[in-house]
Image (cartoon, rainbow, N blue to C red; front, side, top):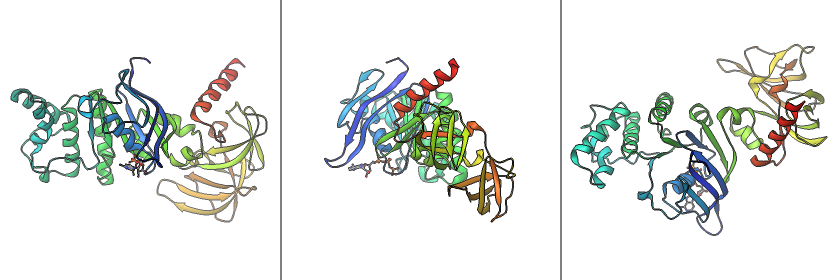
Length: 368
Ligand SMILES: Nc1ncnc2c1ncn2[C@@H]1O[C@H](COP(=O)(O)OP(=O)(O)OP(=O)(O)O)[C@@H](O)[C@H]1O
């Protein structure tokens, strides 16, 4: 393991009781100084991963390493990790200064050092001058910043953030997304952020782990995951997708919607049954002659920036199109797309198998 990995999960399983396994054989690595997001639907195990990193619980099986050292049995207060909770968990009877100073007072730091450190933490989150304010006099966004100041004042190596923006309205939430991202860059501390909001994950992260039912379905940069989802769950969960059945004729040639197309994917068996993903914004409306697929328009909605057009091809596959061009319900239109817009997914493929296949066929393509 290289020095860069601040956290490593090795085949971690967590069960709360005998019948329910909440995390199943999860392995991943976290690099120092990056912004990570755990993304997935409610109950998929995101908070459980955070609790295991924080040391609020132990894995049932497997190992967790921090800077290369096994930490399964190390208690929370001995880990250089701080958590920002969804409800911020601030003390309502203490003012801003005392909330941020709390951890330092427990550690019995000198008064003057506490003052300096709290001031610095408040400066980092743009709350200078708010020291004497009561928590009840602070807005949602300001409370959020107090909670972050309370975490960074301890100078942890990792900050865990459990849906910290979910209580804020949309505008403030977007502002705080920028602020948090900027703060992480300035501090250079590893952030592990939990959300079920895919747009938030795409906007903020260096790396995303997509979780489903206690497993990591896919990990990668936002563009990796958006552009190359490995399965139906990821394609559906991250953004809107058209997912249709197809057949891989041979490398770089795929058949769907009664037609055969060039694509950029490979490493499949000849005539293997696959699923094909095309994002709605990668489809262009054109004439029947210029189109690659013929689609009969079933419905159309104006969404402000674009039209959302829904139609069916000759095989009965449904196609969703985001276009600035209008169509007419009941007519046939042509759909055009580039070979790169086609993403072919092997049925039941794991992330490891996907990575291996990608490496093999990209290697083969480069040799040609
Ligand atoms: N203390 C507990 N005892 C028993 N089951 C638990 C306990 N804590 C969590 N669970 C269960 O474990 C599963 C995963 O929970 P977890 O809180 O990790 O999910 P999550 O992805 O963070 O969900 P959410 O987005 O709803 O917070 C859920 O089915 C939950 O009901």
